[in-house]
Length: 105
Image (cartoon, rainbow, N blue to C red; front, top):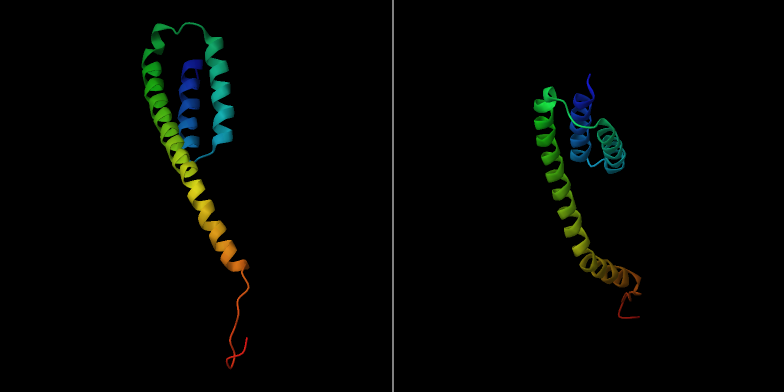
């Protein structure tokens, strides 16, 4: 397999890693792909179709990452509200409760 096709295969695998939320593996693979690409030099004429396919896969990978980033940003934005609700619930659980049995405290 030529190096350009290897880059496409790696990018396709990275797209799957992103879809599965396997961020650490994705980061390692992407770093390796960048190193490989940097070592290749100019692409030969015969690599055009592979490079076009690589551009499509990269665009899809970028869209998946942008979507995941937006979701994380929404989750982070909701954290102060969630903490307040949890704190209120914890305080209610910690408060001593009185039970009245036969009108006696």
